[in-house]
Image 1: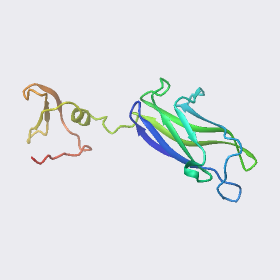
Image 2: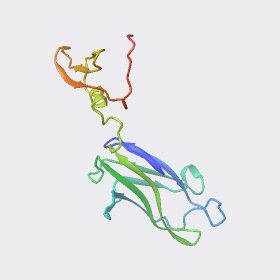
Image 3: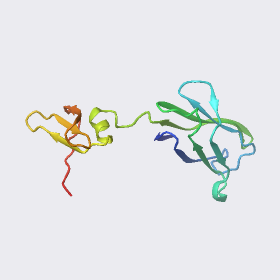
Image 4: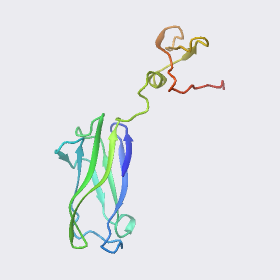
Length: 160
């Protein structure tokens, strides 16, 4: 389960379940350890993880909270959430519970989208060439010039 691409130092939550061999919800006999792996590395971390077994008194439903403030969690990386050594219905279980990334898949990677995130006072597009000039808060100093490609959408702003 891919949880998404999170901002640096944020907190994420997800629920996961445990079931017996017939599919019925079951509590873990041994909780095991939830570990986080970065990219394809074998170094794991348990920093910032809170695992609540039988969340809201629901047998077999568990809530995982991960606070991404530890130095292990860095922007530009992918992470795997792994259950290690839980005993469920008499069997030892190791499983990947979820994956996520931190500022590694933001849509704001094009020049156009990056400029939109800046403190832009005005943007002026030349109708004949399509070139967009972005101006800072004085309205006269151009901070970026961009020519949209065919793959980029045009944004139209309606005056309020």
